[in-house]
Length: 303
Image (cartoon, rainbow, N blue to C red; front, side):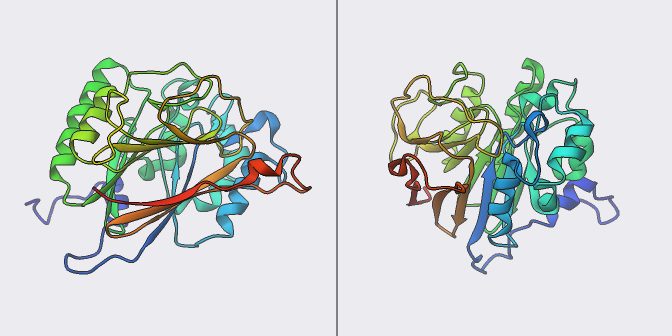
């Protein structure tokens, strides 16, 4: 047990503020909004920017919802001025209830300094880019998909210890670059050892961004094989406001895809299950292809 006199680090204090309810008390359903690839200063025309549109969706929703940002908060370089001029006026209104993860554009300017400076204790231990917390009866793990080999291995060891220590039945992990996707970026196996650890621990969900589209993939193991009983379901939600991009190849496990609208993923996390729905930003005029406007939604039980 940690001595009472031990000073609580700021990032631990932030995690404690999201602590799960005491044992024996069922948590009420927790609403989560998630997206990455958000504020592009090259095309920022507030209040009509892409980031302003998705922020308005969240603002109309549950005022106590948890916000998960999936990397690439600003474009083009993740610079301090981009956070202050483009991100802060839009998604910045949710900063106190946001739990972020870094993306590759945060590192364009070096060591993601502007990202860590902007989010402070909300981003976990300074400079590391991965942390975990509990809320609503769920365990959340924010991971960093842009680490070099040695730091990545330290993250993997930390993750295995974190998973072993968690008492939550339901777990959600999130990072920026998806391991599986039908989008425009070259598929990466960098996070395969991470996925293998998550699958072994029975984790329910992985959220990612990076590809500027929305996609839901079937539960699978770390070798891309379907696993309905214990597989990890992945959502790609790179629709936070930046310019959308095309699908270039079809992943065999892809179950739903859309690159017609920016938007956010809404999750309702319950004690033993979860619901999902993709909420698109509605156009100001009638859509040219209304058949593409159907919202992806569903529900599933925890493992």
